[in-house]
Amino acid sequence: MSAWKFADSNFVYGRVESVDRDLYELTFKRQRSAGAPRTRTLVQAGTIGYVRDPPLLSGAETGVGGDLGAYRFNSRLDPVCGRHPVSFHVFFRIRFSAPKMNHGGHMQMAGGC
Image (cartoon, rainbow, N blue to C red; front, top):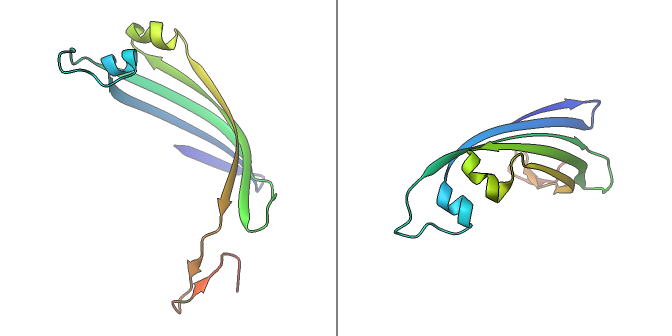
């Protein structure tokens, strides 16, 4: 995963992944039974997204964003996943600040003295 911050509160991010998965489990959406063949298949995905961090709540970081994902895999999964699957997500994020320790071993709230 990679992210690029610009204009102080804007982020563009991307992710590429490749995983080896069990074909039976992906096709039937359940754990492979003992008698089912052990066939592995490669599933690849790429995502690109954008997040803006507007200051909406005091004491918390907020973000509003969205991303687009595209997938590639063996044609045997076409009946289950479609020929060219794409996903889109829109989200709102809240991160609360955690207490931090200062050099004297005392707790300090982020942004405090």
